[in-house]
Length: 230
Image (cartoon, rainbow, N blue to C red):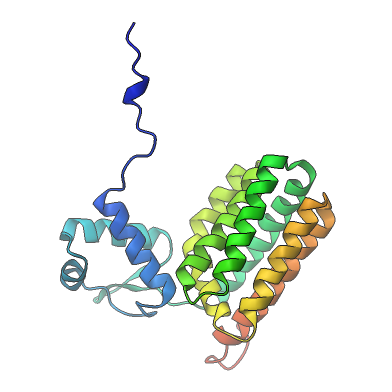
């Protein structure tokens, strides 16, 4: 029998839709497209050099990620961030990420630990640059590595579905105070607890990191509403 292994595609090339989706997602997360801004198909076609079919598919996908909302009689627009949504996202993250960090600390192997250290070093390096998009992607890689090493694939699927909105919140909090320094510092604490095989400390470091980010987001998102909405 002939060997058909040579037919396997190791890494399928990105489709035009996938490229357009990534660029649109990055534009929303980075703030290039502002909250509430209308997304006009014809304008986007001209700006991106793609067909209306591609733009419509991209918008539908971004709507499923919570990054786009369809407004009655106006059409699609960049979804607005509000504290109630952010609060729920932080609560979900606190539960899933702290449990993943604890599980990771109890069972991580040498190869996964090396990958996590590499991800942390990349994250720390990006924190000194002015490229928010690259920092967000490095942060996502760090967390993905933790969930993978913890064998918490289903939990990561939940977090991954929220990642667009999580990334918007990260950009929001990174733009304030000393978060570009304290954020990576907290993630190094998470890594250190995992490397030392200390599950309780790893979970606690996760919760501390998220509590700080949550408080920054609360202050920003409630500033224009006169206070808490809880």
